[in-house]
Length: 113
Length: 110
Image (tube, rainbow over all chains, first blue to last red; front, side):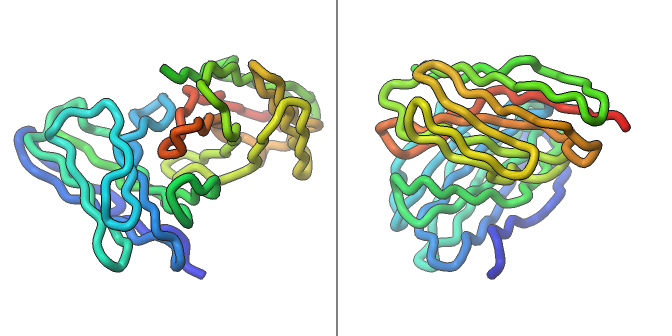
């Protein structure tokens, strides 16, 4: 079975631009979570989506938004990019909300210049 | 607010030199404590989940233990291929997020 798939793998954007990151969960998994990992730190929770609804949000500004589609894939959008948004963005899927089994993708490395 | 703290931040071992990594947590209603391994530029790879104090789990040279305030990842006779960042994360009653520690970067020299 395919694991969690994220695209693109690497991305370079300019300050002020907008970016969209994509995630396809493991087949049968209905929950997708997004995490931001700044170099040298642990991942920080951004969002959780389950059955196309937002079920949790971390301490991130409104420039960050996400959605989940009927096929359970998900997009993370970031507007008005700042240099500090440079990070590895990780997607994790699980069977359902409250499910313990999180599987992470390899991430999207975003560099803002 | 849930908090997870890992120590040391970095650890250098000689091949075969056993050691332990620490994960201290303050979580309202812990439902699970996770250990992950992360290689550079990759996503975290699941190692263990511990659910209650006193629980232990083993996998090859790794053994994870849990108390009411801490978890330890013991590495016995490590090899260079064990070099990675080890992350612990807590899962609370709200059930919608993992709270991660900052990680321990382990380097094992041959």
